[in-house]
Image (cartoon, rainbow, N blue to C red; front, side, top):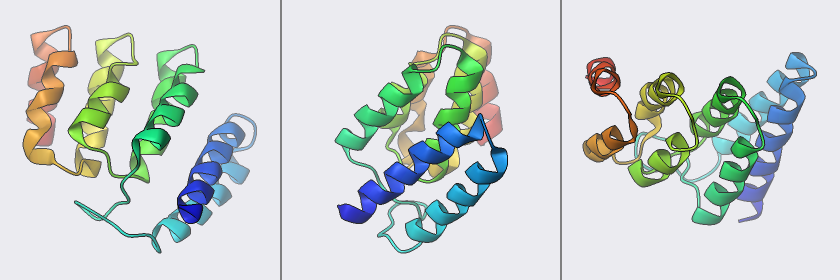
Length: 139
């Protein structure tokens, strides 16, 4: 649990620094990936997160006012952790626009711990065309 919190803390710090200093954020992301390499992995080879971590990260995402900023934070989260379809869906629902939802859904597919159930994400989209684009991108 201690290493999980340290990875999580570094992720939050990297997200914060990204807006001020991309160089510092890049250094922190490298540290995160090295620590993450030492943690147990699941699914496609990434670390799973607890519901507590998920709730905290969702709060961090919603602190951002605009979808494009939320998307940057969410991609950082997804990139260094394995998420279930249910967890991904709850994050994707935080976005206002289908374009952002679609971009995250496509990006997050390779980090999903249960990709066989990815179809469950499709009902978060407002437009059938978005569902079609996500299907085409992940297949």
